[in-house]
Image 1 (cartoon, rainbow, N blue to C red):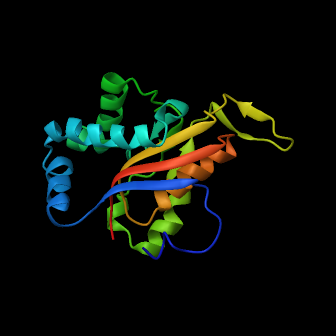
Image 2: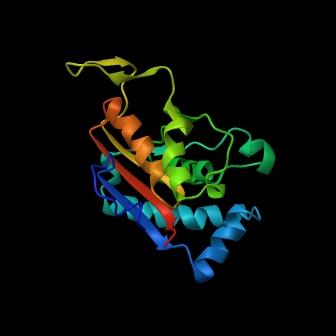
Image 3: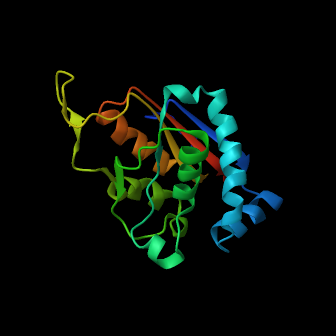
Length: 185
């Protein structure tokens, strides 16, 4: 919580974690993520869609936080991509999984608080076709959506959401909200 309550400017306009990551919800998330119980994805997708409706989903494009390289090969699937595909196919949400890329192979869950905050900057980047806004407000490359909802499964320190939001805003996004199923208290 200390990371999320720190003073200073944030690139995120708002962060919406739906549930605390504890008790039976933690067990449910563990079954989904670690035991590969993909049948839970539609349930979680419906919960996310309900939250998206409340923030006016039709104004935004959904940008999933990208998985670490090799995750799909190791586990056979990516939970955040599963959620994004559910929202795209079943709920007709515009999903933009072509904007951000994750460079690092390391798992965030194995890092401590200070390491997470320091590592986020080296982990994510815009794909090359999306350029940062140059001085004078002119964007180089393909423009990013003006209004974005970043999607992740679990928020711990908020470093991932913050870095991704910063990248999107540097490339011209005007509003960036974060949406996650769980937050670690």
